[in-house]
Image (cartoon, rainbow, N blue to C red):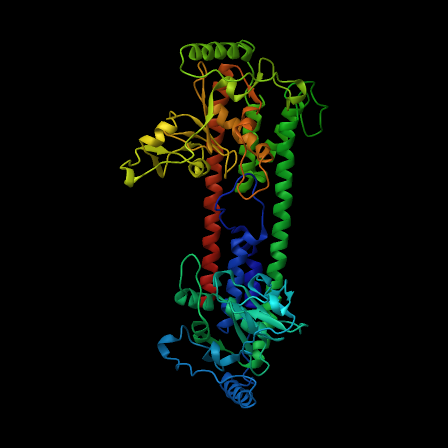
Amino acid sequence: MSAIQKLLTEYIDIWTAAETEKKSGRGRCSGNAGSVYGIKKLRELILELAVRGKLVPQDANDEPASELLKRIQAEKAKLVAEGKIKKDKALPQITDEEKPFDLPLGWEWTRVGQIGHDWGQKTPDTTFTYIEVSAIESSRGTISKPVLVEAENAASRARKIVRKGTVIYSTVRPYLLNIAVIEKDYSPEPIASTAFAVVHPFCSMPPRFFLYFFRSPLFVRYVESVQMGIAYPAINDSQFFSGLIPLPPLAEQNRIVAKVDELMALCDQMEIQHSNAAEAHEKLVSHLLGTLTQSPVRGEPVEPHPSTSSGRTEFEDNWQRIAAHFDTLFTTEASIDALKQTLLQLAVMGKLVPQNPNDEPARELLNRIQAEKARLVAEGKIKKDKSLSMISKDEQPFELPPNWEWARFPELGEFGRGKSKHRPRNDPKLFNPGIYPLVQTGEVARAANVIHEYHSKYSEIGLAQSRMWPAGTLCITIAANIADSALLGFDACFPDSVVGFVPFQPLNDTKYFLAFMKTARENLLKFAPATAQKNINLEILESVLIPLPPLKEISRIVAKVDELMTLCDQLKARITEASKLQQKLADVLVEQAVSQ
């Protein structure tokens, strides 16, 4: 077994356990194999070792690269004399200071422009096979989506001639690694975009060796050092062809390609196995958590199972099944997110805390809320809103516990969208500087539970068109970011893309309603039209049915949710730290392998 294969197999747990940290994620993240940090680092290591001469053994009988370079010069001169290629500009000599590391015997440093040539450019005059950047399957280094284009429809960038065996490298946003080998003869003639640098290797050198070199950390670091631009970085052809390349003997190039192909196939297998295991784990977690929300809390005890005690309800039995395997089920950030979402769903279904028959029923709570609402209307503090229709049995999404009631936002508090279509904010021309915090959809979407930031302010004119919502207001987005919700951490105004909810007394806390909105978001997304600028209207939110518990039970639910969310966050933090440790271990393995 080779050293690299031993490194791969002995530390397989580290390569597959070191997953890429999720930037953000709603709901249940998929165990995407492409996100496995350890396997990504392993691929980089294979390429790094390959271009340093550490992947396959050297053979003293191989023709040295110095002789290969002489043959390259002879072939280049012949092609120039025949008029098949143009004579290129002389490249600067390579200084010792430029060489990043020592090469094995038989290797030579050279520049990219010295190992291959292009085929020139032409303006298409007949139908052609167009290869643009979007045609590249970057993960495989192949052309996946070439298109036939009529000459009269040719884009101005469709100019570069390519042939079978040519390597193309996208110099625009090079970090995407849109690099490929033209692996077959296309008919009609293939033409590539000018976004590519084109290299056709001399002396029948294997194009895949150069594909792997251009993807290697060595060349990536060089490109990063010379590219220009931040949002849309790019390098020019001159910078590309000036890059240094460690050139092995021709025979060793072929051995390197064969070994890299073999090891990349092993990495593919590891990714597939990891992906299948992650997908199976996610499905299992989803199924078991689903049994909790779908099973009744009350009812007849289930038939006793050999592994369980008799006398439990179906809900208790399902919960015990999860609890018995908790350490196995909840081992990823995605599984913790799924657990949190399920706990919120159980909370608003009356399955998280026990009911107390001595609590004042929610019907009485609704009567007191209506009395408070009538008082505020009579005093002119709020406007009388339109009557809402009765809630039919068919509309109710699930059966409520005793003493709960279905209600809607307008019945429970002040409920309305922000205003100011003209959005007057800082206006130096009118000497109306922004004074009042303005919370927009982005701040709501980024908040975990409470909004602590704002980046815009309303002037006096803006406030006159809108209103100040008090701290504690439940904020719900209805445009761009649909049905995101969070509690306002300070007094602020809203634009018309944010809806506010302030409950009437005796309701004095919006935390329960925040928990409810987090469970309702997925269903509300279905109402958003399939357009670039997604939105839902206020009437949709006004019609949402809210399960309303007795007032005392609301307090118990909020306390239990706070307690369980804290525990979940602690567990998720430990998983995140463990994942970061695995990433560091993968990095150390790579560093050690390269330094040997």
